[in-house]
Length: 136
Image 1 (cartoon, one colour):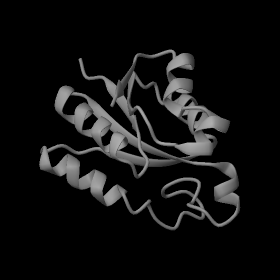
Image 2 (spheres, helix red, strand yellow):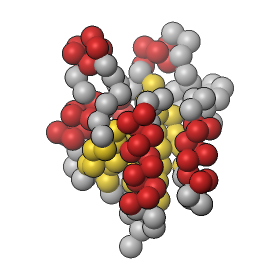
Image 3 (tube, helix red, strand yellow):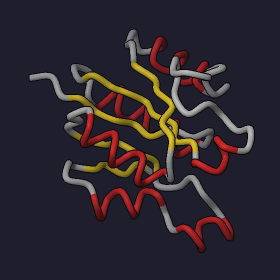
Image 4 (cartoon, one colour):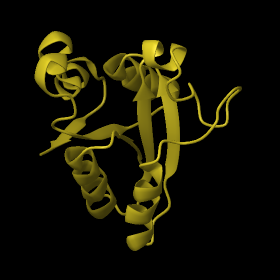
């Protein structure tokens, strides 16, 4: 049976490692890559709130790399931009889209941002109702 996996993505090495792991480890599963855009960032000239949605300009630049990584493995993936605080947006997407599991990098934020906001991977792992695989 094919499962639906979610790979949260930012422009970081751990996120790319998570995508590569998901593509290699789960060859039969459907994989969706999401990039969460914080509400404040979207409101102040950041990325669009949704790919293809009203007012959407373009995908994040690193989605080209995501597509290349998948193509190297003869895989196709779906990519989406979602709006909201990263952990909340990821978990909402999981609930709304009937995702069966999450594969994500162990890091993304660093420094003061991580201290103030906490690790997205930690928040998702604590609150998810589906299995979460953390890739270093």
